[in-house]
Length: 272
Image (cartoon, rainbow, N blue to C red; front, side):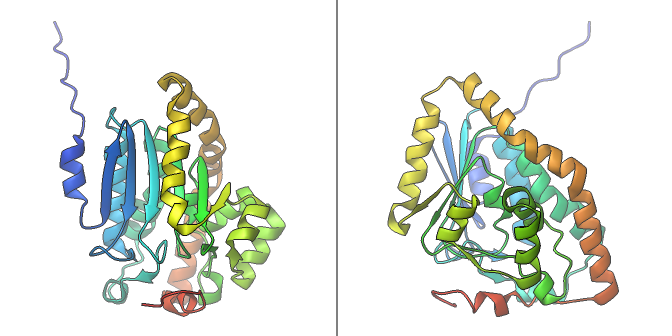
């Protein structure tokens, strides 16, 4: 008789500790909150953050004790700076463009198979992670922007894909070519976000929305999430590899640099 394979599931206490240098985690009544950070301050973007988030999506999604996920970041930015030391040595090869950049987006949609809420606390890069969530709320200070084209990159790592889906072809095209800064009120008007909330109320509102969703049976919650995530799954399957491939080709032809701090300095608020 064939022996069954014992099921191993990640334990919250273990992966909370494993990712604590990049993600603060807490869980209450089945709702897990992830807050990105670097050394307790605003999140710094780089390969380590890529790797940590990809692994976190897998552990969060594979833990049956997690029934809803809230994703947020550390003030004053969503992601406000790039790791400049990492950037100098960055290899834009397979590891960057397939294993990291691709899986960062794909694993959020395909592995985190529970309702998701994003709470965008301020302006920042890579807001596609927030826009991919079932519900996206933001503070009044939030700014949504893709500066890839402005910096000489093909905008193919996820932000354009979410803009095309949510804004439509014409608005997305204009936003890419002009590096348009879409503020919180415009984001609400155009359908990028569901609510604009005062910063000091943002996380409380995310927990409140989570509580409303959690009132329904688990099967209803999960099946509803399945339906809500279908357009993203279809978009990723149909388009995302082409987006990543085009960005990667552009990098190898022109070798641009991630001068993202130039864009950050145009946002309001703390520039540290």
